[in-house]
Length: 378
Image (cartoon, rainbow, N blue to C red):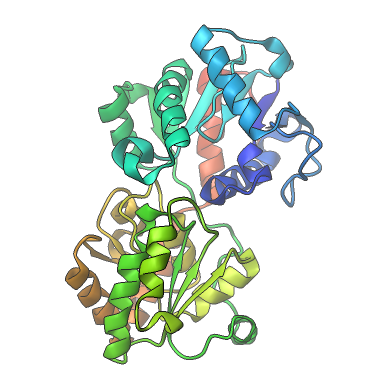
């Protein structure tokens, strides 16, 4: 038996999809042993993520864009090829790309953002996903949705039968935990942070709603409830307008944008923050909510999509389109030491309910419903 797991997103470091593929692979490896084979679409071009280089690798050398076009063309024409995964007993596609393999397939769907907020996608990407994803969802034998919200979107938008979908949550990686004071001090000095800061994490794109958060923070600064907003994440697409808006704010000097940071630094940044904010209009899962909670950081988030499902009662919520509601929610937490302490403790407990071992075990058991001969070591 050979289970092929596509880790291309992890190889290309594609934000949340990268963490999903890499963490799932690391958690599945001891459960599947020699049955696990990693698949990637850029063989020889990029190294595997840390902790995966001992595993066998298969795939193609085409690279991301040519591979993406070839997959859609083959699927549209109803073609399949044993050569893509010659030994596969099962193929698991972990990003929104299902190769035309002959083995039974599992497809992870993280979100349907292009359907819900098409204006927040580049035209080419929107056209591709609009054409490809309904096809991929039909052709997959089973679908993993990373949240109940994504499952509901699949049922509503694509009429995917409910019994074809299994909800398997993501989790914060094990190293997300409260950092020692010395590490917090080191990272604060590295990024020239002083005093009380809020943190928001995610690829910078319109649906992340960072400009609205920056406006809300202006009022927190005025009330002397915080000193700085730190926005962590690489710049994505269509973010120029928001950047111009932020640059024009009188308090823009108190908004730090260090870009992508290492996970070790991110742990310390969460641990030292006054609170973490996830102001997005839409998230398929919202992993930063769990990561912040696992580091003992209180969380405020939008009351939309999957975020209340992830944060539970440990977070506080607001309407992401209501500036006053956002301000008052953030102010209520930032200005109350006892509440933040309570939320920190609740968040630590909430984060412990999610683990990659549990997610991997549920995923492996799903594999067995398609291929009973797959062995799972627990």
